[in-house]
Figure 1 (cartoon, rainbow, N blue to C red):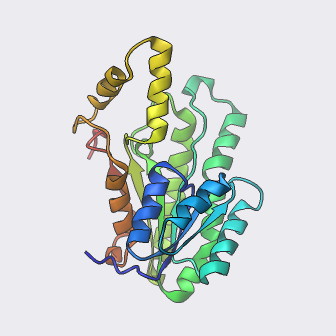
Figure 2 (cartoon, rainbow, N blue to C red):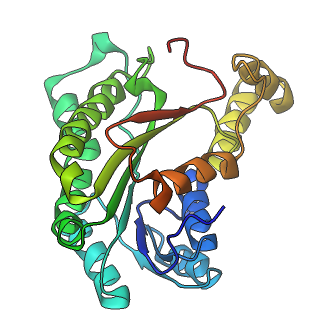
Length: 257
């Protein structure tokens, strides 16, 4: 299937590892120019060097002026930004009883502000050209809160609310705005977390992996390319009538419709 995005330029935030890297590679495979971003500059450039048409930008999106540097690098290299894939770390784990006002401010600062700034920097160009794709890589706690992630349960749904509102307002301009909610995926980060848990408990890592995977109806975690394929479609020309929607890629983990 030709997604018809060859020659389009995609900025993929936090794309030096995991699902972000997978999405960057999937878009590159479809012929898009890709801007690989992350705090590890050499890694960003190394990944970009493996792609047909890409640059690597070593910038922390949450730093002062970070979004501006990313977008300017994209414009300098390719002239426009047609696709923006929002991604980034969530707030620290916390239960609701422990949340403070300062924690809430931090959650907003880390989840909403940098991503809204990225959107604001590319949106006018997308609307002027009559084509644009904004996709937020998020998590299933947007629709089903997770007990130990109270701050993420505050920040991610708030970002989703902003993006849903935005989607309605920019739809006449040919710009779509969607979310893709990830469940459990087999990434290097998950492997590291499970290894740490195994070392702490004295249990085999394979046993922990099997136990956690059993909670997913498919009885396994997803592979990065499975998430990236859905993301690439939502960023494509073919998804032109799909906007303001939160899609789940979770192996059936969320219980609600």
